[in-house]
Image (cartoon, rainbow, N blue to C red; front, side, top):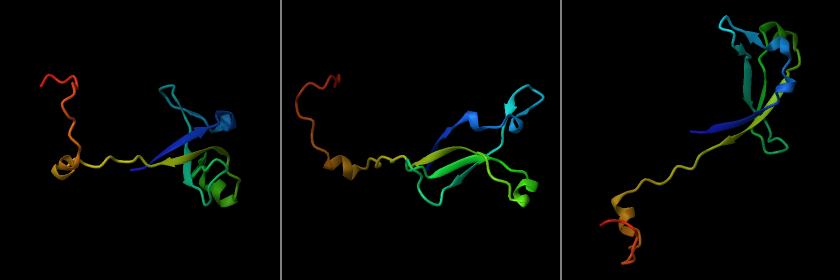
Length: 99
């Protein structure tokens, strides 16, 4: 599993792109796309406002509002009987355990 940490610049979002639902909440459709090359700060993804079909067909410029960096958490190795056997003993020192 990978995660993408994203930083958005809210100042770049045109107010016309923000829609208000019947419940009063405000929404915006955005796209997160993988970059062809790493960014200045090693960003792997870019974020921009979604375009309508007409805007895409007309070749309208994208409104870039942020960027992101892929993060792949390192999973820990599973504990197996063999890996427990390979661990060093704790010795006789007081480890605070009641047993």
